[in-house]
Image 1: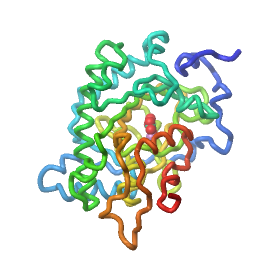
Image 2: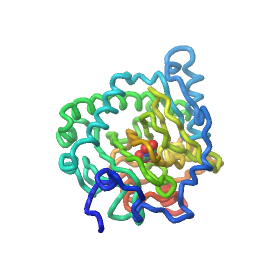
Image 3: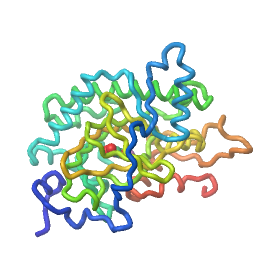
Image 4: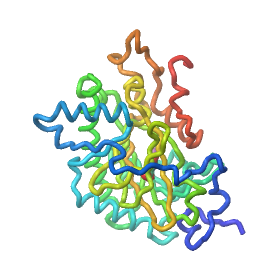
Length: 346
Ligand code: OGA
Ligand code: NI
């Protein structure tokens, strides 16, 4: 019988097979035995180095990571461990609430600024993803907090504190990244209009047949920069030289990745890299990405300083709102949206 459950969490408790709507065609499966696992898959950068005599070396490490990997991990990032533990606990508590309580936040409309949903975009996609997610807009806080879930009771206060702390980290990173591109330290911060910040709490239930489906299929992030917190269950994989590499969790570190807008501003110097989330048969997994973005009305274009005769502008000028709409409407496809904003196709 067809299920009437809106959320994966409620659909799958106790199933022994992946429902057919989650099964990928054979050519589009994770091939888990092909994935490389190495100790340090992407650079781990100590942000303590931004203060004091290691400053320029640390900026250089960040620039190299943005250019060659599109991904890096950070330690000594200034976000207290207690806050990290609290946000993880609160997310887990949220997804463990009774179905009726969770569903108060449900919506399948991507334009809603607070919503619980499932997969990626249930209105447009052909195959579903093994994920439920709560998505929140969170900057400026006072515009959105009143809309957030009020259960668990500590949710608003703790998530607000976390968002503020992560925003501080983002602003420090944007200065370092601007500097690494040879731009004024405040260049990128000033190129984002009024700024915007979204976050997601991704919940990936255990999956009886993880080789048939994805938590999230390969995609690039449409925003400027993403700061990902993951629990201790592996699942994130990054494409590097044509190979999928597992990024195994290191406690108290964040994973930073370059999004499409950074690729545009840097005029292709820095890369928005394909990544995906796979699931496993034993353990639930929670990840909490913060998506830092330009505001919708901000005009995004390659920095003038990075355009030359040898390196002409790769992208035309566009608004972030225009870009974001394209992203949600076409579904998560490995072909990035960036191709639609090339200067030559203007
Ligand atoms: C995302 C994402 C990876 C993960 O939400 O955009 O890439 O490990 N998540 O959940
Ligand atoms: Ni992503």
